[in-house]
Length: 404
Image (tube, rainbow, N blue to C red; front, side):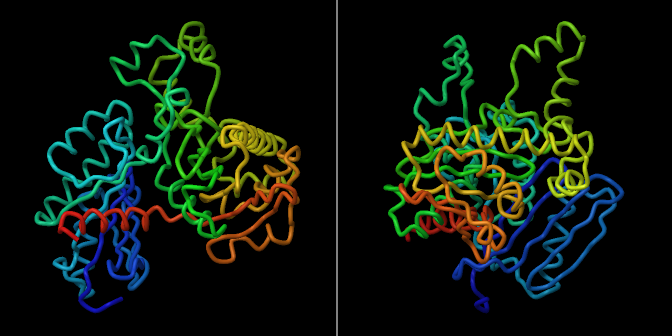
């Protein structure tokens, strides 16, 4: 860290947690990371790692309590608040308003609020973080980095649903897509590794974690993605169902007397890997159980890998042959067996899988798993870094505002 250099604070507020990161603005290097979890409960706590380590218990504490405790810890360890030049926030839904990150002003705040109905679990928490930072650092500019922005290049044939047109023209109900910051980061990494200009690179990016999405990237731009109006659509996830027949939901509402609230709870929090296995939403737990003979865990894994592979295969046609397929996110970066099973499902594409390389990935930032010898398509595992992407966007917009 350069002594006295400007700092960038990154804030990612969830409904019951908050992630923080502090970057040196001159080096694009993370100095600290922090996690506030179990908020509003007796177990609420803040954990800080990096330049210094600390743990603070905050019984009953909310987002504000975590941010204040983090600021106090910075002061205790000789990080002056005055060095924080800009604050970057992850904002999940920007609707059609934003195709890039934006400096936050009253208009931007209002537009984020207008998207609350599209992301009721996320945007209110994101706005809470913006308001709390404005109180703690009132003179600092803030930047919103939108999960949806990267996908604003989707063509209309990809983002429109085949429902009455008025639902789009009057209410903007369409596919928006998410994980855009992650897909954008790993796409740039892949293009650099391939020694190609991003604008001349076709990719398929699979962000696989507790939330999962696949993105088709043609000439460096998102042209299709598996998540939709909300993060519920697409492939199965940790606790989310992914895409299901809408008739199933109508059946549950009409014939089984399930309330909309109960349906929402089931599809978002009781389905996916957890629902199929009846055991866990954590892929590490499921792979261990499957290896021990648990058939429900094995089924959950098989459904997950099949659906991810099927989506990747469909995007192969969308991008007219990718230069690389990317695995990223917690599962994509670490679950070697899951990567191998997904690639095995893609056997029709002639991928020459390297078990030794798969076992070693990710050695640094990029690991090569296999290659199609005739087309040159690589399959890569790339460590994502959404916090760094947010910090870089915040610095870029700060420099623009300063006239740099």
